[in-house]
Image (cartoon, rainbow, N blue to C red):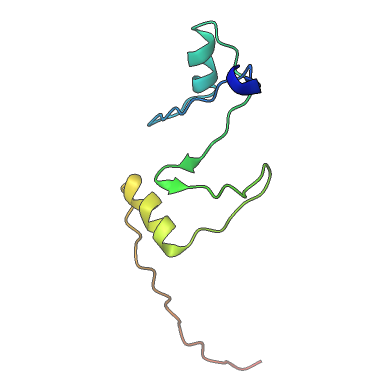
Length: 92
């Protein structure tokens, strides 16, 4: 490499798929005889995952993020109502 820089043997690619199947990205690259060493999810639907989120960790979504996911799957929440019946105490 020029200027004494070391060149990495690995390359990074950004791939976006609209609907994922099991190991689809890995199979895509391996069909071209390219070995995949690491896959990293950077977003789920329209919600970008924080870079600080590590394997096995989770993040609670705020309302804006939930709205994005609901919109993506065309989900319209149904208003829930709670009905309370009065109970008459009878004789024992």
